[in-house]
Amino acid sequence: MQILKVISLLLDYPAQAVVDAHDELTAAITATRVISPEQRSAVQALLNKLTTTELLDTQENYHSQFNRGRHFSLLLFEHVHGESRDRGQAMVDLMAQYENDGFNIGVKELPDYIPLYLEYLSYCDEPTARAGLADVEHLLALLAARLEEQKSPYAACFTALLQIAGFEPELAVAEVREQVSKEVYDDSLEALDALWEEEAVTFMAGDQAASCGVSSAPQKAREESAVPLHWVDFGHDATAANKV
Image (tube, rainbow, N blue to C red; front, side, top):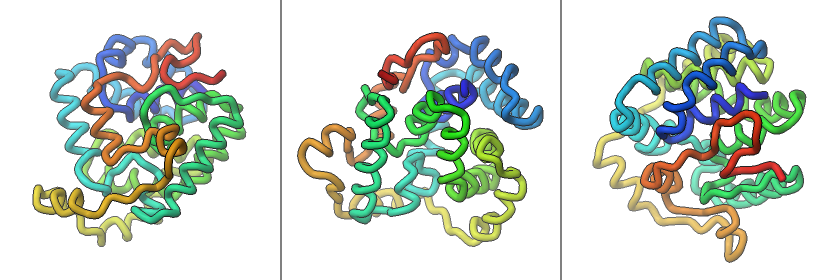
């Protein structure tokens, strides 16, 4: 589904390639019928905002939203396993799933990075893609609720994903809203310093770690490189993560 590739690009670190591809991405959003007109409008509004705002400002906003602590992390297993070693096995299993399906990761990124996961699902058949999203429905709803609480336009990506997975976005988000309302979110410098001072955990050893691109700060590495995760030409395989 092309819309999954669009959402993948919108959730990745902002890059000029997305700005240049505005019309192509708009056409893909307009053409899709797997999300409602309301969801299409919300995703389109996010695209318009990202492509009409100064790129450096967009990148700074992205950093503030997703790279300050774990609350809005775009790493799936960070929400499930935290820093436990179970997270390492989960990443190994996901990497094996990619490889078994002929999906070759050509970037230094953790396999549970949501834009990468969506890139993978965009190449799958529709039932498989929907099932892959349904498997993480609770996390999608949780991130949607947290982003809606901050009035972030990025919430549109997660409500659209919920709908593609077969859930009613409003109901799914409502189920976790009470949980989110009780959460304490601290993105102060003191809290962030405390986070980074925690003991680092090596999830995988040797070649496994290298193959999965394990890094102490994968999103920071993405930010510094400012290279899009994948190209947006829907007629060709992605340059960074190809199905082979």
